[in-house]
Image (cartoon, rainbow, N blue to C red; front, top):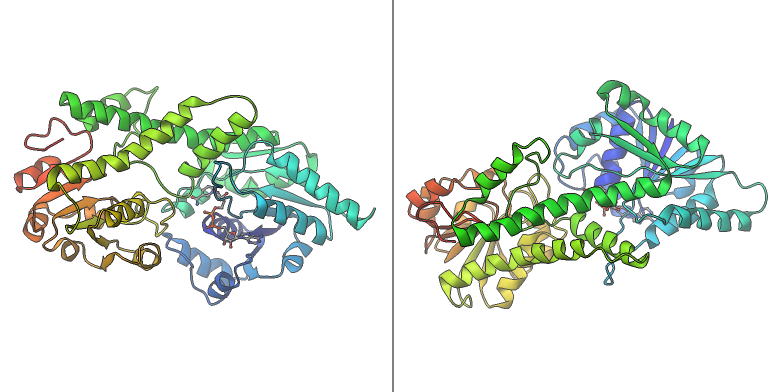
Length: 445
Ligand SMILES: NC(=O)c1ccc[n+]([C@@H]2O[C@H](COP(=O)([O-])OP(=O)(O)OC[C@H]3O[C@@H](n4cnc5c(N)ncnc54)[C@H](O)[C@@H]3O)[C@@H](O)[C@H]2O)c1
Protein backbone atom coordinates (compact mmCIF):
# COMPACT_ATOMS: atom_id res chain seq x y z
CA UNK A 1 0.00 0.00 0.00
CA UNK A 2 0.98 3.64 -0.32
CA UNK A 3 1.36 5.01 3.18
CA UNK A 4 2.19 8.47 4.51
CA UNK A 5 3.45 8.99 8.05
CA UNK A 6 2.97 12.50 9.43
CA UNK A 7 5.45 13.22 12.22
CA UNK A 8 8.61 11.10 12.13
CA UNK A 9 9.51 11.19 15.83
CA UNK A 10 9.97 8.19 18.10
CA UNK A 11 6.70 6.57 17.01
CA UNK A 12 6.39 7.82 13.43
CA UNK A 13 9.91 6.98 12.31
CA UNK A 14 9.87 3.46 13.73
CA UNK A 15 6.38 2.86 12.30
CA UNK A 16 7.48 4.17 8.90
CA UNK A 17 10.55 1.94 8.82
CA UNK A 18 8.71 -1.19 9.97
CA UNK A 19 5.81 -0.71 7.53
CA UNK A 20 8.33 -0.20 4.71
CA UNK A 21 10.08 -3.40 5.80
CA UNK A 22 6.73 -5.21 5.45
CA UNK A 23 6.67 -4.26 1.77
CA UNK A 24 4.62 -1.05 1.74
CA UNK A 25 5.72 2.16 -0.04
CA UNK A 26 6.08 4.69 2.76
CA UNK A 27 6.77 8.40 2.79
CA UNK A 28 7.64 10.10 6.09
CA UNK A 29 6.88 13.78 6.62
CA UNK A 30 7.80 16.15 9.41
CA UNK A 31 7.48 19.89 9.82
CA UNK A 32 10.89 19.93 11.48
CA UNK A 33 13.10 20.64 8.47
CA UNK A 34 16.28 19.74 10.39
CA UNK A 35 14.91 16.29 11.20
CA UNK A 36 14.11 15.61 7.55
CA UNK A 37 17.58 16.82 6.53
CA UNK A 38 19.19 14.48 9.07
CA UNK A 39 17.11 11.56 7.81
CA UNK A 40 17.85 12.31 4.19
CA UNK A 41 21.55 12.37 5.07
CA UNK A 42 21.18 8.79 6.29
CA UNK A 43 21.41 9.56 10.01
CA UNK A 44 19.04 8.66 12.85
CA UNK A 45 17.84 11.66 14.86
CA UNK A 46 17.60 9.86 18.23
CA UNK A 47 19.02 6.80 19.96
CA UNK A 48 16.96 3.68 19.36
CA UNK A 49 18.47 0.17 19.09
CA UNK A 50 18.22 -1.51 15.64
CA UNK A 51 16.76 1.61 14.03
CA UNK A 52 19.87 2.84 12.11
CA UNK A 53 20.30 -0.57 10.45
CA UNK A 54 16.61 -0.83 9.57
CA UNK A 55 16.56 2.72 8.16
CA UNK A 56 19.62 1.98 6.02
CA UNK A 57 17.82 -1.06 4.60
CA UNK A 58 14.45 0.54 3.80
CA UNK A 59 15.81 3.86 2.54
CA UNK A 60 18.45 1.97 0.54
CA UNK A 61 15.85 0.03 -1.44
CA UNK A 62 13.62 3.11 -1.80
CA UNK A 63 10.66 1.75 0.14
CA UNK A 64 10.93 4.63 2.66
CA UNK A 65 11.48 8.23 1.57
CA UNK A 66 11.18 11.55 3.40
CA UNK A 67 9.68 14.91 2.53
CA UNK A 68 8.75 18.29 3.99
CA UNK A 69 5.93 18.72 1.54
CA UNK A 70 2.53 17.61 2.85
CA UNK A 71 0.82 17.82 -0.56
CA UNK A 72 3.49 15.50 -1.98
CA UNK A 73 3.21 13.09 0.97
CA UNK A 74 -0.57 12.87 0.74
CA UNK A 75 -0.90 12.80 -3.05
CA UNK A 76 -0.36 9.05 -3.48
CA UNK A 77 -1.35 7.91 0.01
CA UNK A 78 -4.08 5.36 0.58
CA UNK A 79 -3.49 5.45 4.35
CA UNK A 80 -2.09 8.40 6.34
CA UNK A 81 -0.88 7.78 9.90
CA UNK A 82 -0.89 10.77 12.27
CA UNK A 83 2.13 10.37 14.57
CA UNK A 84 2.59 13.95 15.81
CA UNK A 85 3.17 14.82 19.45
CA UNK A 86 0.30 15.31 21.91
CA UNK A 87 2.20 17.06 24.73
CA UNK A 88 0.61 17.90 28.07
CA UNK A 89 -1.12 21.21 28.70
CA UNK A 90 -0.90 22.89 32.12
CA UNK A 91 -4.52 21.91 32.93
CA UNK A 92 -3.81 18.17 32.51
CA UNK A 93 -5.28 17.54 29.07
CA UNK A 94 -3.12 16.93 26.00
CA UNK A 95 -2.42 19.61 23.40
CA UNK A 96 -4.25 18.33 20.32
CA UNK A 97 -3.55 21.29 18.07
CA UNK A 98 -0.97 19.35 16.04
CA UNK A 99 -3.51 16.57 15.47
CA UNK A 100 -6.16 19.09 14.42
CA UNK A 101 -3.67 20.81 12.08
CA UNK A 102 -2.79 17.53 10.37
CA UNK A 103 -6.46 16.57 10.02
CA UNK A 104 -7.23 19.86 8.27
CA UNK A 105 -4.09 19.75 6.11
CA UNK A 106 -4.69 16.18 4.96
CA UNK A 107 -8.33 16.95 4.08
CA UNK A 108 -7.16 20.03 2.19
CA UNK A 109 -4.54 18.16 0.14
CA UNK A 110 -6.23 14.77 -0.37
CA UNK A 111 -6.38 13.94 -4.08
CA UNK A 112 -7.97 10.49 -3.68
CA UNK A 113 -10.07 8.60 -1.15
CA UNK A 114 -7.87 7.91 1.87
CA UNK A 115 -7.88 6.73 5.47
CA UNK A 116 -6.60 9.04 8.19
CA UNK A 117 -5.36 6.99 11.13
CA UNK A 118 -4.70 8.41 14.60
CA UNK A 119 -1.58 6.71 15.92
CA UNK A 120 -0.74 9.56 18.29
CA UNK A 121 -2.15 8.93 21.77
CA UNK A 122 -5.38 10.92 22.05
CA UNK A 123 -8.38 11.00 24.38
CA UNK A 124 -11.54 9.08 23.50
CA UNK A 125 -13.65 11.45 21.39
CA UNK A 126 -10.75 12.87 19.34
CA UNK A 127 -11.89 10.82 16.36
CA UNK A 128 -15.22 12.65 16.40
CA UNK A 129 -13.35 15.94 16.38
CA UNK A 130 -11.27 14.85 13.42
CA UNK A 131 -14.43 13.92 11.50
CA UNK A 132 -15.69 17.44 12.21
CA UNK A 133 -12.42 19.09 11.10
CA UNK A 134 -12.35 17.06 7.90
CA UNK A 135 -16.00 17.75 7.10
CA UNK A 136 -15.44 21.50 7.49
CA UNK A 137 -12.42 21.41 5.17
CA UNK A 138 -14.30 19.31 2.60
CA UNK A 139 -17.22 21.75 2.71
CA UNK A 140 -14.77 24.55 2.00
CA UNK A 141 -13.31 22.62 -0.96
CA UNK A 142 -16.74 21.94 -2.47
CA UNK A 143 -18.52 18.84 -3.72
CA UNK A 144 -15.66 16.92 -5.41
CA UNK A 145 -13.37 16.61 -2.36
CA UNK A 146 -12.34 12.95 -1.97
CA UNK A 147 -13.57 10.96 1.05
CA UNK A 148 -11.33 10.87 4.13
CA UNK A 149 -12.18 8.03 6.53
CA UNK A 150 -11.08 8.23 10.16
CA UNK A 151 -9.62 5.37 12.21
CA UNK A 152 -7.74 4.95 15.47
CA UNK A 153 -4.72 2.63 15.68
CA UNK A 154 -2.97 3.31 18.99
CA UNK A 155 0.70 2.51 19.40
CA UNK A 156 2.12 0.45 22.26
CA UNK A 157 5.85 0.39 21.45
CA UNK A 158 8.39 0.97 24.22
CA UNK A 159 11.29 3.33 23.59
CA UNK A 160 14.53 1.35 23.81
CA UNK A 161 12.79 -1.68 22.24
CA UNK A 162 10.71 0.20 19.69
CA UNK A 163 11.79 -1.68 16.58
CA UNK A 164 11.36 -5.11 18.15
CA UNK A 165 7.98 -4.10 19.61
CA UNK A 166 6.74 -2.76 16.28
CA UNK A 167 7.93 -5.80 14.33
CA UNK A 168 6.39 -8.20 16.82
CA UNK A 169 3.58 -6.47 18.68
CA UNK A 170 1.69 -8.10 21.57
CA UNK A 171 -1.49 -7.02 19.84
CA UNK A 172 -2.75 -4.69 17.12
CA UNK A 173 -5.75 -2.51 17.91
CA UNK A 174 -7.71 -0.53 15.40
CA UNK A 175 -11.08 1.12 15.56
CA UNK A 176 -13.23 2.64 12.86
CA UNK A 177 -16.82 2.88 11.69
CA UNK A 178 -15.72 2.92 8.04
CA UNK A 179 -15.65 -0.29 6.02
CA UNK A 180 -13.01 1.22 3.68
CA UNK A 181 -10.76 2.05 6.65
CA UNK A 182 -11.25 -1.42 8.14
CA UNK A 183 -10.26 -3.17 4.91
CA UNK A 184 -7.20 -0.97 4.40
CA UNK A 185 -5.95 -1.40 7.95
CA UNK A 186 -6.36 -5.16 7.61
CA UNK A 187 -4.29 -4.95 4.44
CA UNK A 188 -1.60 -2.78 6.06
CA UNK A 189 -1.09 -5.22 8.92
CA UNK A 190 -1.83 -8.53 7.13
CA UNK A 191 1.86 -9.45 6.55
CA UNK A 192 2.69 -8.69 10.18
CA UNK A 193 -0.26 -10.63 11.58
CA UNK A 194 0.62 -13.55 9.32
CA UNK A 195 4.26 -13.54 10.35
CA UNK A 196 3.83 -12.93 14.09
CA UNK A 197 0.38 -14.37 14.76
CA UNK A 198 -0.47 -11.57 17.17
CA UNK A 199 -4.07 -10.94 18.22
CA UNK A 200 -5.97 -8.17 16.45
CA UNK A 201 -8.67 -6.17 18.24
CA UNK A 202 -11.08 -4.57 15.77
CA UNK A 203 -13.43 -2.09 17.33
CA UNK A 204 -14.88 1.42 17.09
CA UNK A 205 -12.83 4.62 17.33
CA UNK A 206 -13.51 5.67 20.96
CA UNK A 207 -12.90 2.13 22.25
CA UNK A 208 -9.54 1.97 20.44
CA UNK A 209 -8.61 5.41 21.77
CA UNK A 210 -9.54 4.31 25.28
CA UNK A 211 -7.53 1.07 25.08
CA UNK A 212 -4.34 3.12 24.82
CA UNK A 213 -5.09 5.40 27.75
CA UNK A 214 -6.28 2.54 29.95
CA UNK A 215 -3.21 0.44 29.13
CA UNK A 216 -0.80 3.19 30.17
CA UNK A 217 -2.88 4.20 33.18
CA UNK A 218 -2.97 0.57 34.33
CA UNK A 219 0.80 0.13 33.96
CA UNK A 220 1.38 3.37 35.86
CA UNK A 221 -1.01 2.12 38.55
CA UNK A 222 1.02 -1.08 38.97
CA UNK A 223 4.19 0.98 39.39
CA UNK A 224 2.62 3.30 41.94
CA UNK A 225 1.13 0.31 43.74
CA UNK A 226 4.50 -1.39 44.15
CA UNK A 227 6.11 1.93 45.12
CA UNK A 228 3.50 2.36 47.86
CA UNK A 229 4.25 -1.23 48.95
CA UNK A 230 7.97 -0.31 49.00
CA UNK A 231 7.20 2.48 51.44
CA UNK A 232 5.49 -0.01 53.75
CA UNK A 233 8.44 -2.42 53.30
CA UNK A 234 10.84 0.26 54.49
CA UNK A 235 8.79 0.71 57.65
CA UNK A 236 8.32 -2.97 58.52
CA UNK A 237 11.71 -4.28 57.47
CA UNK A 238 10.58 -6.23 54.40
CA UNK A 239 12.19 -6.45 50.96
CA UNK A 240 9.98 -5.18 48.13
CA UNK A 241 11.93 -7.08 45.47
CA UNK A 242 11.05 -10.36 47.14
CA UNK A 243 7.48 -9.22 47.77
CA UNK A 244 7.17 -8.44 44.04
CA UNK A 245 8.68 -11.78 43.12
CA UNK A 246 6.25 -13.57 45.41
CA UNK A 247 3.32 -11.65 43.94
CA UNK A 248 4.50 -12.06 40.36
CA UNK A 249 4.39 -15.86 40.47
CA UNK A 250 0.61 -15.59 40.75
CA UNK A 251 -0.61 -16.10 37.18
CA UNK A 252 -3.38 -13.57 37.81
CA UNK A 253 -0.78 -10.90 38.66
CA UNK A 254 2.37 -11.68 36.65
CA UNK A 255 5.84 -10.24 37.26
CA UNK A 256 5.93 -7.23 34.88
CA UNK A 257 5.87 -3.63 36.07
CA UNK A 258 6.42 -4.47 39.71
CA UNK A 259 9.83 -2.79 40.03
CA UNK A 260 9.86 -0.33 42.90
CA UNK A 261 11.98 2.74 42.36
CA UNK A 262 11.95 6.47 41.97
CA UNK A 263 8.87 6.37 39.80
CA UNK A 264 7.84 6.45 36.18
CA UNK A 265 8.76 9.20 33.72
CA UNK A 266 9.02 9.56 29.97
CA UNK A 267 6.85 11.21 27.40
CA UNK A 268 3.90 8.84 27.86
CA UNK A 269 2.95 7.67 31.37
CA UNK A 270 2.82 11.06 33.13
CA UNK A 271 1.04 12.70 30.20
CA UNK A 272 -1.34 9.82 29.56
CA UNK A 273 -2.35 9.38 33.21
CA UNK A 274 -3.07 13.12 33.35
CA UNK A 275 -4.95 13.06 30.06
CA UNK A 276 -7.08 10.08 31.09
CA UNK A 277 -7.89 11.72 34.43
CA UNK A 278 -8.73 14.95 32.62
CA UNK A 279 -10.97 13.15 30.13
CA UNK A 280 -12.77 11.25 32.91
CA UNK A 281 -13.47 14.46 34.79
CA UNK A 282 -14.59 16.23 31.63
CA UNK A 283 -17.26 13.56 31.10
CA UNK A 284 -18.41 13.65 34.72
CA UNK A 285 -16.45 10.84 36.39
CA UNK A 286 -13.83 11.73 38.99
CA UNK A 287 -11.26 8.92 38.58
CA UNK A 288 -9.60 9.58 41.95
CA UNK A 289 -7.47 6.42 41.78
CA UNK A 290 -5.41 8.11 39.06
CA UNK A 291 -4.87 11.16 41.28
CA UNK A 292 -3.34 8.84 43.85
CA UNK A 293 -1.19 7.14 41.18
CA UNK A 294 0.24 10.54 40.26
CA UNK A 295 0.85 11.59 43.80
CA UNK A 296 2.62 8.34 44.79
CA UNK A 297 4.84 8.77 41.74
CA UNK A 298 5.77 12.33 42.70
CA UNK A 299 6.48 11.16 46.25
CA UNK A 300 9.08 8.66 45.04
CA UNK A 301 11.22 11.47 43.65
CA UNK A 302 10.97 13.39 46.89
CA UNK A 303 11.96 10.19 48.71
CA UNK A 304 15.37 10.35 47.04
CA UNK A 305 15.88 13.94 48.19
CA UNK A 306 14.80 12.91 51.72
CA UNK A 307 17.24 10.00 51.78
CA UNK A 308 20.06 12.27 50.64
CA UNK A 309 19.15 14.88 53.25
CA UNK A 310 19.02 12.22 55.98
CA UNK A 311 22.56 11.21 55.13
CA UNK A 312 24.10 14.58 54.31
CA UNK A 313 21.92 17.07 56.25
CA UNK A 314 22.30 20.16 54.08
CA UNK A 315 22.77 19.54 50.39
CA UNK A 316 24.13 23.01 49.63
CA UNK A 317 27.76 22.82 48.61
CA UNK A 318 27.72 18.99 48.40
CA UNK A 319 28.54 17.17 45.17
CA UNK A 320 25.80 14.74 44.15
CA UNK A 321 26.30 12.40 41.20
CA UNK A 322 23.31 11.22 39.19
CA UNK A 323 24.07 7.95 37.44
CA UNK A 324 21.77 7.98 34.42
CA UNK A 325 19.73 10.75 32.84
CA UNK A 326 17.43 9.08 30.28
CA UNK A 327 14.00 8.19 31.66
CA UNK A 328 14.87 4.53 31.11
CA UNK A 329 17.68 2.48 29.57
CA UNK A 330 17.88 2.10 25.80
CA UNK A 331 16.87 5.66 24.90
CA UNK A 332 18.27 9.19 25.01
CA UNK A 333 14.77 10.56 25.67
CA UNK A 334 14.80 12.99 28.61
CA UNK A 335 11.13 13.95 28.59
CA UNK A 336 9.83 13.81 32.19
CA UNK A 337 12.97 11.91 33.22
CA UNK A 338 13.17 11.63 37.03
CA UNK A 339 16.91 12.38 36.83
CA UNK A 340 16.25 15.76 35.22
CA UNK A 341 13.69 16.59 37.90
CA UNK A 342 16.17 15.58 40.63
CA UNK A 343 18.99 17.59 39.02
CA UNK A 344 16.87 20.75 39.13
CA UNK A 345 15.81 20.07 42.74
CA UNK A 346 19.38 19.49 43.86
CA UNK A 347 20.66 22.58 42.06
CA UNK A 348 17.88 24.61 43.70
CA UNK A 349 19.12 23.35 47.08
CA UNK A 350 22.63 24.59 46.22
CA UNK A 351 24.22 21.21 45.48
CA UNK A 352 26.82 20.71 42.78
CA UNK A 353 25.31 18.16 40.37
CA UNK A 354 27.29 15.75 38.20
CA UNK A 355 25.52 13.61 35.64
CA UNK A 356 26.65 10.52 33.75
CA UNK A 357 24.65 8.86 30.97
CA UNK A 358 25.96 6.63 28.18
CA UNK A 359 23.92 8.27 25.38
CA UNK A 360 21.88 11.24 26.65
CA UNK A 361 24.47 13.82 27.74
CA UNK A 362 24.00 16.07 24.68
CA UNK A 363 20.38 16.57 25.62
CA UNK A 364 21.28 17.01 29.31
CA UNK A 365 23.52 19.94 28.37
CA UNK A 366 20.41 21.73 27.08
CA UNK A 367 18.07 20.64 29.87
CA UNK A 368 20.39 21.18 32.84
CA UNK A 369 23.07 23.65 31.72
CA UNK A 370 24.37 24.08 35.29
CA UNK A 371 25.20 20.39 35.77
CA UNK A 372 28.68 18.98 35.25
CA UNK A 373 28.55 16.25 32.60
CA UNK A 374 30.91 13.31 32.87
CA UNK A 375 31.36 10.56 30.30
CA UNK A 376 32.51 7.83 32.67
CA UNK A 377 30.40 6.57 35.60
CA UNK A 378 33.25 6.11 38.07
CA UNK A 379 34.82 9.44 37.14
CA UNK A 380 31.43 11.02 37.76
CA UNK A 381 31.51 9.57 41.30
CA UNK A 382 35.09 10.69 42.02
CA UNK A 383 35.13 12.39 45.46
CA UNK A 384 31.36 13.03 45.36
CA UNK A 385 29.38 13.18 48.60
CA UNK A 386 26.79 10.73 47.27
CA UNK A 387 25.66 8.96 44.11
CA UNK A 388 22.08 8.36 43.06
CA UNK A 389 21.25 5.63 40.56
CA UNK A 390 18.59 7.19 38.39
CA UNK A 391 18.61 4.97 35.26
CA UNK A 392 19.39 1.25 35.33
CA UNK A 393 21.63 1.21 32.24
CA UNK A 394 23.81 -1.96 32.13
CA UNK A 395 26.84 0.37 32.38
CA UNK A 396 25.48 1.49 35.77
CA UNK A 397 23.81 -1.67 37.11
CA UNK A 398 27.00 -3.55 36.26
CA UNK A 399 29.28 -1.32 38.33
CA UNK A 400 31.28 -3.14 40.97
CA UNK A 401 30.24 -1.70 44.36
CA UNK A 402 33.89 -1.89 45.46
CA UNK A 403 34.84 0.48 42.63
CA UNK A 404 32.03 2.82 43.66
CA UNK A 405 33.27 2.70 47.27
CA UNK A 406 36.76 3.53 46.05
CA UNK A 407 35.66 6.44 43.82
CA UNK A 408 33.16 8.18 46.08
CA UNK A 409 34.29 10.76 48.62
CA UNK A 410 31.54 9.65 51.04
CA UNK A 411 30.40 6.07 50.38
CA UNK A 412 26.71 6.92 50.04
CA UNK A 413 24.61 5.37 47.27
CA UNK A 414 20.89 5.95 46.84
CA UNK A 415 19.82 3.22 44.44
CA UNK A 416 16.67 4.73 42.92
CA UNK A 417 16.24 1.73 40.62
CA UNK A 418 17.21 -1.14 42.95
CA UNK A 419 19.80 -1.90 40.28
CA UNK A 420 22.72 -3.02 42.45
CA UNK A 421 23.05 -6.24 44.40
CA UNK A 422 22.19 -4.75 47.78
CA UNK A 423 24.19 -7.28 49.78
CA UNK A 424 27.30 -6.82 47.62
CA UNK A 425 26.91 -3.05 48.00
CA UNK A 426 26.73 -3.31 51.79
CA UNK A 427 29.61 -5.81 51.87
CA UNK A 428 31.70 -3.34 49.85
CA UNK A 429 31.23 -0.78 52.62
CA UNK A 430 28.67 1.43 50.91
CA UNK A 431 25.92 3.18 52.86
CA UNK A 432 23.40 1.62 50.52
CA UNK A 433 19.81 2.88 50.32
CA UNK A 434 17.59 1.00 47.94
CA UNK A 435 13.88 1.63 47.60
CA UNK A 436 11.87 -0.63 49.93
CA UNK A 437 14.79 -2.92 50.77
CA UNK A 438 14.17 -3.02 54.49
CA UNK A 439 15.73 -6.40 55.23
CA UNK A 440 19.04 -6.10 53.39
CA UNK A 441 21.50 -6.46 56.28
CA UNK A 442 23.40 -3.25 56.86
CA UNK A 443 21.34 -1.20 54.40
CA UNK A 444 19.58 1.89 55.62
CA UNK A 445 15.95 2.51 54.75
N1 LIG B 1 7.37 7.77 22.48
C1 LIG B 1 6.70 6.67 22.82
O1 LIG B 1 7.22 5.74 23.44
C2 LIG B 1 5.25 6.53 22.43
C3 LIG B 1 4.64 5.26 22.48
C4 LIG B 1 3.29 5.15 22.11
C5 LIG B 1 2.59 6.27 21.73
N2 LIG B 1 3.20 7.50 21.71
C6 LIG B 1 2.41 8.65 21.27
O2 LIG B 1 2.75 8.92 19.92
C7 LIG B 1 2.71 10.34 19.66
C8 LIG B 1 4.06 10.81 19.15
O3 LIG B 1 5.02 10.57 20.17
P1 LIG B 1 6.58 10.65 19.86
O4 LIG B 1 7.27 10.18 21.09
O5 LIG B 1 6.88 9.99 18.56
O6 LIG B 1 6.77 12.23 19.71
P2 LIG B 1 7.99 13.00 19.04
O7 LIG B 1 8.00 14.34 19.65
O8 LIG B 1 9.22 12.14 19.12
O9 LIG B 1 7.57 13.10 17.51
C9 LIG B 1 6.53 13.90 17.04
C10 LIG B 1 6.95 14.44 15.68
O10 LIG B 1 5.84 15.11 15.09
C11 LIG B 1 6.34 16.25 14.38
N3 LIG B 1 5.23 17.17 14.13
C12 LIG B 1 4.53 17.92 15.02
N4 LIG B 1 3.55 18.61 14.40
C13 LIG B 1 3.64 18.28 13.09
C14 LIG B 1 2.90 18.66 11.93
N5 LIG B 1 1.86 19.52 12.00
N6 LIG B 1 3.27 18.14 10.75
C15 LIG B 1 4.29 17.29 10.68
N7 LIG B 1 5.03 16.87 11.72
C16 LIG B 1 4.70 17.37 12.92
C17 LIG B 1 7.42 16.78 15.31
O11 LIG B 1 8.33 17.62 14.63
C18 LIG B 1 8.08 15.48 15.76
O12 LIG B 1 9.14 15.08 14.92
C19 LIG B 1 2.29 10.97 20.99
O13 LIG B 1 0.90 11.14 20.99
C20 LIG B 1 2.70 9.93 22.01
O14 LIG B 1 1.93 10.02 23.19
C21 LIG B 1 4.51 7.64 22.03
